[in-house]
Image (cartoon, rainbow, N blue to C red):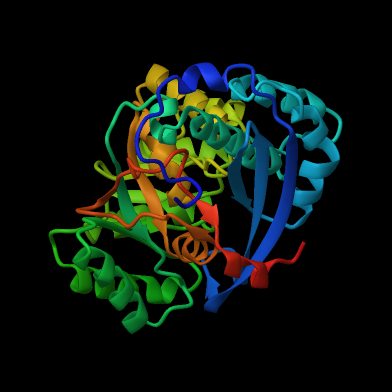
Length: 379
């Protein structure tokens, strides 16, 4: 039987897992070249780096990962591994709190938060494997599947490439898609109309500016996008501009939701967006916000503020984490991460009728490193 698979619940697994300690934590980095150079409103890239963490204990191995610089792997091994090793494998939140304390002087946001996220996810995966249940059931689960939206539509694409990509997702049964805007404003209305023609009137079209507009530019474009039938505008201004986001939310057209929050480094950052009334839909990324422990904290904040949640990227992980979230509206099925996850990991799941359901026959999140991933290893 392949690692991560299970024939069914093991009698007494909760008892045998009790008292298991984390024996070893290690990290590696893998770089995957994109099919072609890509861009959005503020950034250009031609590769993606995935930092993978493995946590060992009780004869099992948990796996977690994040997307960022190779330095995250160094942070894991220099600051976090010794903090987590020896802790109770059944208590990931306790290890999460210890990691937060360990990075007090080294720096919790950015690299620190992504390192914690990868380790935390590995610990939750390990716990679920020790219990011999899918990760969604170990959290525990409140839904059977996670709705997704197709995401890509990079500004570097031709109109033909854009239309073909978005149409592919709609043909897969995904009823909502998102494209990038703002690198070339003169071309954006034409790109939006090409996208609409490709997906038809029955699919939802969303746009993401990646914080590239000024406040007044964003107000102008909010009106234009709404006129094209778009009802979701992500990061019209940077997520750090809470006043600007609130301005867009208050003065933008009725029916156009403002979304932001993908760069929240822990639930505290998410709380700031909610308390400022800055978003109609809050985002966070399980690989940045502190892993599954951090993501569940964000879910509680969204529930308290009565704001829906949209998960940013990492669909293979969010397929499980999202099943434990009361406020989840959908998860980003991001082109680059889907491709990287399929290249590096066995056990990824494809959407069915617009949603991803965790595999009931595999313990943990069901992912395992492919042997051929080694050719992409850079650390």
